[in-house]
Image (cartoon, rainbow, N blue to C red):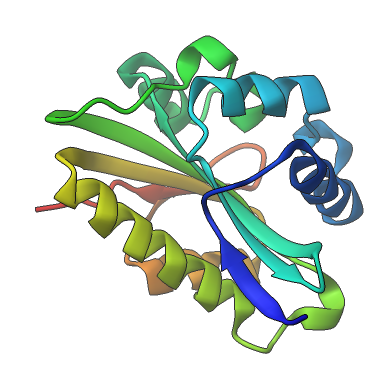
Length: 178
Protein backbone atom coordinates (compact mmCIF):
# COMPACT_ATOMS: atom_id res chain seq x y z
CA UNK A 1 0.00 0.00 0.00
CA UNK A 2 1.15 3.51 -0.65
CA UNK A 3 0.28 7.15 -0.95
CA UNK A 4 -2.42 8.05 -3.45
CA UNK A 5 -4.71 10.89 -4.43
CA UNK A 6 -8.40 10.03 -4.73
CA UNK A 7 -10.96 12.41 -6.17
CA UNK A 8 -13.50 9.87 -7.37
CA UNK A 9 -14.79 6.90 -5.37
CA UNK A 10 -14.90 8.90 -2.13
CA UNK A 11 -16.93 7.11 0.55
CA UNK A 12 -18.48 7.92 3.92
CA UNK A 13 -15.56 6.43 5.87
CA UNK A 14 -13.13 8.74 4.08
CA UNK A 15 -15.32 11.74 4.87
CA UNK A 16 -15.36 10.69 8.55
CA UNK A 17 -11.53 10.52 8.53
CA UNK A 18 -11.35 13.97 6.90
CA UNK A 19 -13.60 15.35 9.66
CA UNK A 20 -11.21 13.93 12.25
CA UNK A 21 -8.43 15.98 10.64
CA UNK A 22 -10.65 19.08 10.83
CA UNK A 23 -11.29 18.47 14.53
CA UNK A 24 -7.56 18.01 15.11
CA UNK A 25 -6.42 21.21 13.37
CA UNK A 26 -9.31 23.69 13.15
CA UNK A 27 -11.02 25.54 15.99
CA UNK A 28 -14.53 24.38 16.90
CA UNK A 29 -16.25 27.20 15.01
CA UNK A 30 -15.02 25.58 11.77
CA UNK A 31 -16.18 22.03 12.54
CA UNK A 32 -18.93 20.52 10.41
CA UNK A 33 -21.09 17.54 11.25
CA UNK A 34 -20.93 14.32 9.30
CA UNK A 35 -24.53 14.97 8.26
CA UNK A 36 -23.59 18.38 6.78
CA UNK A 37 -20.71 16.88 4.83
CA UNK A 38 -22.78 13.96 3.57
CA UNK A 39 -25.45 16.46 2.51
CA UNK A 40 -22.86 18.39 0.49
CA UNK A 41 -21.54 15.14 -0.97
CA UNK A 42 -25.04 14.02 -1.91
CA UNK A 43 -25.55 17.28 -3.82
CA UNK A 44 -22.19 16.97 -5.61
CA UNK A 45 -20.01 13.88 -5.17
CA UNK A 46 -17.00 15.53 -6.81
CA UNK A 47 -16.23 18.10 -4.09
CA UNK A 48 -13.41 16.22 -2.34
CA UNK A 49 -9.80 15.45 -3.16
CA UNK A 50 -8.31 13.05 -0.61
CA UNK A 51 -4.70 12.14 0.11
CA UNK A 52 -4.65 8.54 1.34
CA UNK A 53 -1.77 6.60 2.86
CA UNK A 54 -2.30 2.90 3.54
CA UNK A 55 -6.07 3.32 3.16
CA UNK A 56 -6.25 6.16 5.70
CA UNK A 57 -6.95 9.81 4.86
CA UNK A 58 -3.92 11.94 5.81
CA UNK A 59 -5.02 15.08 3.98
CA UNK A 60 -7.82 16.47 1.91
CA UNK A 61 -9.43 19.51 0.41
CA UNK A 62 -12.96 20.49 -0.42
CA UNK A 63 -13.69 22.37 -3.66
CA UNK A 64 -17.40 23.12 -3.90
CA UNK A 65 -19.35 24.87 -6.64
CA UNK A 66 -21.65 27.23 -4.73
CA UNK A 67 -24.52 29.56 -5.54
CA UNK A 68 -23.73 33.13 -6.52
CA UNK A 69 -25.50 34.43 -3.40
CA UNK A 70 -23.42 32.22 -1.08
CA UNK A 71 -20.21 33.17 -2.90
CA UNK A 72 -21.00 36.88 -2.46
CA UNK A 73 -21.83 36.33 1.23
CA UNK A 74 -18.53 34.49 1.82
CA UNK A 75 -16.58 37.10 -0.17
CA UNK A 76 -18.06 39.89 1.96
CA UNK A 77 -16.57 38.32 5.09
CA UNK A 78 -19.96 38.30 6.81
CA UNK A 79 -19.89 34.53 7.35
CA UNK A 80 -17.59 31.51 7.33
CA UNK A 81 -17.88 28.23 5.46
CA UNK A 82 -19.85 26.48 8.20
CA UNK A 83 -22.81 28.62 7.06
CA UNK A 84 -22.89 26.72 3.75
CA UNK A 85 -25.95 24.49 3.53
CA UNK A 86 -26.55 21.62 1.13
CA UNK A 87 -28.82 23.84 -0.97
CA UNK A 88 -25.85 26.20 -1.51
CA UNK A 89 -23.84 23.44 -3.23
CA UNK A 90 -24.41 23.26 -6.98
CA UNK A 91 -24.65 20.13 -9.05
CA UNK A 92 -22.45 20.12 -12.14
CA UNK A 93 -24.13 20.56 -15.51
CA UNK A 94 -22.37 20.70 -18.86
CA UNK A 95 -21.94 24.13 -20.44
CA UNK A 96 -22.44 25.91 -17.13
CA UNK A 97 -20.24 28.45 -15.33
CA UNK A 98 -19.79 28.26 -11.54
CA UNK A 99 -18.34 30.13 -8.62
CA UNK A 100 -16.44 27.88 -6.22
CA UNK A 101 -15.28 27.80 -2.63
CA UNK A 102 -11.98 26.11 -1.79
CA UNK A 103 -12.01 25.01 1.85
CA UNK A 104 -10.52 22.66 4.39
CA UNK A 105 -7.09 22.19 2.93
CA UNK A 106 -5.48 20.09 5.63
CA UNK A 107 -2.58 17.64 5.84
CA UNK A 108 -1.92 15.67 9.01
CA UNK A 109 1.00 17.17 10.93
CA UNK A 110 3.37 14.22 10.54
CA UNK A 111 3.07 14.53 6.74
CA UNK A 112 3.58 18.30 6.48
CA UNK A 113 6.49 20.01 4.74
CA UNK A 114 6.71 17.10 2.30
CA UNK A 115 4.85 18.77 -0.55
CA UNK A 116 1.54 17.02 0.07
CA UNK A 117 -0.47 20.25 0.24
CA UNK A 118 0.87 21.16 -3.18
CA UNK A 119 0.10 17.62 -4.35
CA UNK A 120 -3.55 18.12 -3.33
CA UNK A 121 -3.68 21.44 -5.20
CA UNK A 122 -2.09 19.88 -8.30
CA UNK A 123 -4.77 17.17 -8.23
CA UNK A 124 -7.40 19.89 -7.88
CA UNK A 125 -5.95 21.73 -10.89
CA UNK A 126 -6.15 18.51 -12.90
CA UNK A 127 -9.74 18.01 -11.74
CA UNK A 128 -10.65 21.56 -12.84
CA UNK A 129 -9.08 20.90 -16.26
CA UNK A 130 -11.03 17.63 -16.58
CA UNK A 131 -14.26 19.44 -15.67
CA UNK A 132 -13.41 22.16 -18.21
CA UNK A 133 -13.01 19.49 -20.87
CA UNK A 134 -16.57 18.37 -20.00
CA UNK A 135 -17.97 21.89 -20.39
CA UNK A 136 -17.95 22.76 -16.68
CA UNK A 137 -16.33 26.14 -16.07
CA UNK A 138 -15.38 28.31 -13.08
CA UNK A 139 -15.45 32.08 -13.17
CA UNK A 140 -14.60 32.77 -9.53
CA UNK A 141 -12.80 30.84 -6.82
CA UNK A 142 -12.51 32.03 -3.25
CA UNK A 143 -10.87 30.55 -0.15
CA UNK A 144 -10.54 31.41 3.51
CA UNK A 145 -7.09 30.73 4.86
CA UNK A 146 -6.52 30.42 8.56
CA UNK A 147 -2.74 30.37 8.85
CA UNK A 148 0.48 31.21 7.01
CA UNK A 149 0.82 27.72 5.52
CA UNK A 150 -2.70 27.95 4.10
CA UNK A 151 -1.96 31.42 2.73
CA UNK A 152 1.18 30.11 0.99
CA UNK A 153 -0.81 27.24 -0.56
CA UNK A 154 -3.56 29.61 -1.77
CA UNK A 155 -1.01 31.95 -3.34
CA UNK A 156 0.77 28.98 -4.93
CA UNK A 157 -2.59 27.93 -6.38
CA UNK A 158 -2.88 31.37 -7.99
CA UNK A 159 -5.26 33.12 -5.62
CA UNK A 160 -4.50 36.65 -4.48
CA UNK A 161 -5.15 38.13 -1.07
CA UNK A 162 -8.29 40.23 -1.06
CA UNK A 163 -8.86 41.29 2.53
CA UNK A 164 -8.54 40.24 6.13
CA UNK A 165 -11.83 39.74 7.94
CA UNK A 166 -12.84 40.14 11.56
CA UNK A 167 -12.27 36.43 12.14
CA UNK A 168 -8.62 36.87 11.06
CA UNK A 169 -9.21 34.74 8.02
CA UNK A 170 -7.99 35.98 4.71
CA UNK A 171 -10.34 36.09 1.79
CA UNK A 172 -8.50 35.21 -1.36
CA UNK A 173 -9.54 37.17 -4.41
CA UNK A 174 -11.39 35.42 -7.15
CA UNK A 175 -9.27 33.73 -9.76
CA UNK A 176 -10.65 34.14 -13.24
CA UNK A 177 -10.46 30.99 -15.36
CA UNK A 178 -10.16 31.51 -19.10
